[in-house]
Image (cartoon, rainbow, N blue to C red):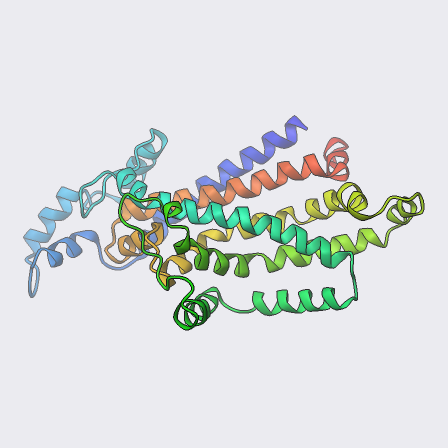
Length: 325
């Protein structure tokens, strides 16, 4: 068991190292640089004098060889230094901290809502295979999953906010204020994210629950008088949820992309707006730090799902202990 956990953690670290290299290489391939953006933003008109551009590139460290800049950046990451914004001169940690709290609140509220919804609806449909409720829920899950997130967001704004006037159309949060102090601004973004991310886990749990409900073990339990909530909670839910852990982990990791879209649609002041601005202005330290944090979040979610599956599934534990996995 210990060997399995160590191998998983080692693999996660290696994946993060590969992502770090890819982020640097891909950013290097982008046209333009921050020096040109700074000069243009400073009011430079027409052609920029080469000597002025060269001086600024030297000041920002952009004239150093790519390998040297990469090693310097990685060394900073390993020491906990995310670097300094090329444009504002502020520490990257301060720039991201001013927005990441709002994104984390949105993501955490979504997870708290999505996971129970996926588990309950999946088990409910799985215990009623072929029934009207099962067919209706399965059809709705497939239909909603096929709709892009931004379309769901636009429909929610048009119907709920502008049509019914029940909730705000934009999720504006004053600087320095937690979104939790204005819960109304979170409702539509959270509904949009749950609608985009919950259908797949619901279908996985439904399929596994239906398979277990038709199995000999459950039939035997029913013949001994075990039924209702006790049957589902003790004999079906643990295995059904364990089978859906990876899809649910994918949904949680998918929050990264979903949150970026939702923040844009609802004008929510989160990390996405800062990241998009940094990419357009070629501010590498901000883009790189945000990308590493996002990748680390996704890797940590999948790793946690692997380890949680061992706790919930005796079959998975036996497979690990016998060396078959």
